[in-house]
Length: 116
Length: 108
Image 1 (cartoon, rainbow over the protein chains, first blue to last red):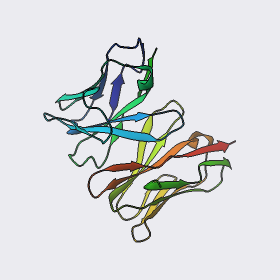
Image 2 (cartoon, helix red, strand yellow):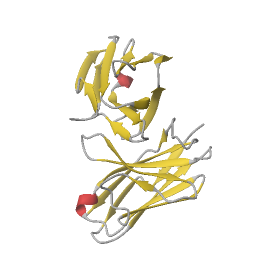
Image 3 (cartoon, chains in turn yellow, purple):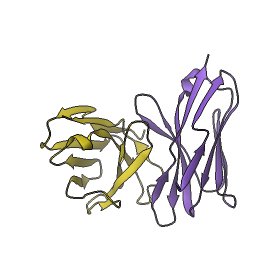
Image 4 (spheres, chains in turn red, yellow):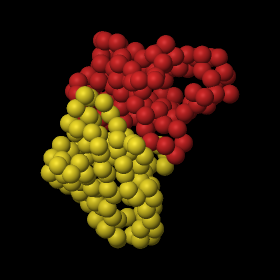
């Protein structure tokens, strides 16, 4: 159990377009979902934490108007990168937790975004 | 200075060797996580610790809260253990801090 999927796994888009990434908990209810980004050869950077039905909490330095997060149900959270630019190219990973504290996180396989 | 420091950054071992990866942190924590990231990018949560020691198969994780230090041990290492191992801590204010990872290669 505790499987998390992400879609798409890989996306290329033109600069200025918006891209939506989905994160789904397939066999459990995820009270809390986390969004991370990872640059090549670097560690994870937490972008935001979202609890179902409430607004996401963004980490310092992350633009909430650029990275829109919606957690409308207990099994789905979406990250929309608005007006994407080449510097947004990165590996985006979500994780999901059954608890509000996010003590045990189950990670999705990641989405590689390339903005041309 | 990073809140979480890992060592070594890179590690190459022969199959069967005992491996230790270290993690030191400088903040108060509510929990420490060990994560494994495979070359394709997928991440698996190996352990969550707040005290003592946990064991799962060939993996052992320990934490010393007073010394702010944790170790991840792999016994009888195998090529499939090759991955990046990441130490992450959850601060008492619910922030997450991540180490830069230890890249492990186990040679047959």
